[in-house]
Length: 376
Image (cartoon, rainbow, N blue to C red; front, side):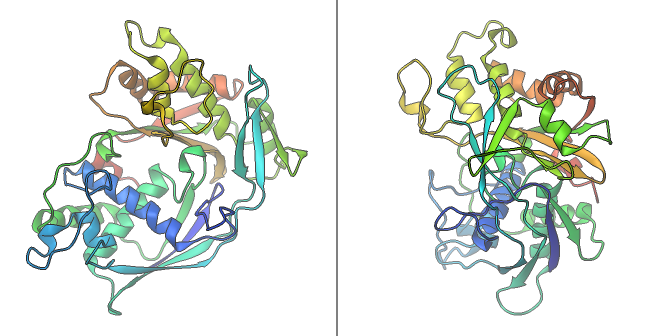
């Protein structure tokens, strides 16, 4: 099973020296597994996790001893069902140092973003046994890649804008049919029946939207001027070339989202720690800039909110914001979900971020099954 991947924003798959000089299979595999875990949790099946105990295959119980994700991606005692080969692609290039134009304090360190969008590359999925890929395994992999292409991102550092891709599929297999086959096989096959940990990525909790700029005549330079960022490349002031098909805009949008989470007026009656809520949703790093003492719960944490850069797709400047936030969460989570799911609220918010450029918002589907009707 082969497909061509065209990155639309920089792709980060890492390497031993953290330079991202080429597209690595390990980074792709980790991303595929992450999205499959979110899908399986969303379908109400158990997924193992290092925090709650990873799967270990036991011959006596066979597949009933491991979760559905490990049945495809492997675990202790049970090998992965496929091999992945990457052909082509290119590195992430030197890092841009991107900063807010008016950060408000001198502690603002900025962000480091890959400067180059990788060349297209081919993914080949090969069965371990040397025969043809099984229908179920192929359907699962197509479903995962469909989610990534339509609603997510591939590789690492995806919460910071990296990893938006366009996929050219071989053949015309329907993702709706793939999803139906996946559900049938999951219901039929025995699997580990453990209990999922709380607050792990679950597709039922995915909320988000695609944002499109209305003016098709805009170029990368004009969008860059509209947002509140500056950048340097190798100590030289940098702006995106007018002909560029992407703009490193994610940091500005994430900064606006953090500011929105600081505004107590967005959460009337909420009396708990709003700083903690902001860091829990947007993530934390080793750098600690809050005036209060750091607590154990404030240890470094990845973001639950993902913001892509602007990229040009089929002649339209496009971006996505998406997040994994519990449907039955607290007041802050409920308000944040409302911001991302209400096109009128999000359009007003994004209008401020992009300096009043006209845009419109297309919310993500509200249920998992509908996610597989798009493009199917």
